[in-house]
Image 1 (tube, protein in one colour):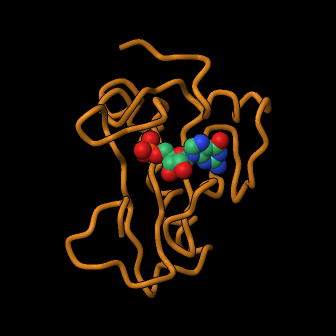
Image 2 (cartoon, helix red, strand yellow):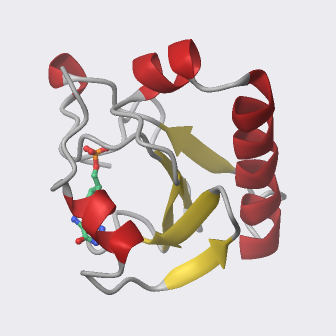
Amino acid sequence: MGYDNDNIFAKILRGDIPNKTVYEDDAILAFHDIAPKTPIHVLVIPKGAYVDMDDFSANASADEIGRFFAKAGEIARDLGVAESGYRLVTNNGENAGQIVPHFHVHIMGGQKIKEGSMARGL
Ligand code: 5GP
């Protein structure tokens, strides 16, 4: 599947749709999820056009991948959830229920997440 330039996160990156930004640099944007499932629910996305984890891990450079995950960890610390704990989730493709076809990770924290629960339906 090719990258859809009209997906919601592409529109957010272009500034066509507003977002509540938590962090931004030349390669990464982090913003609050519009429908938070936990008290802290932030999405971290690369600015590059990657459909999903499969695409990102196969086609992004090692530097881009390393910077992305290092920054996701830093953002979680800045959000204050590192010590109490958080869940880092990515939904890849249809079986995982991925809704937005631009690679993103969810940082979810601020409450105890039930054992065995998934990103949705906590
Ligand atoms: P996934 O693709 O991993 O299933 O989840 C996509 C996530 O994006 C959902 O948690 C959903 O609430 C969030 N989302 C969808 N549209 C928007 C939007 O326009 N703005 C923001 N901030 N989040 C969105």
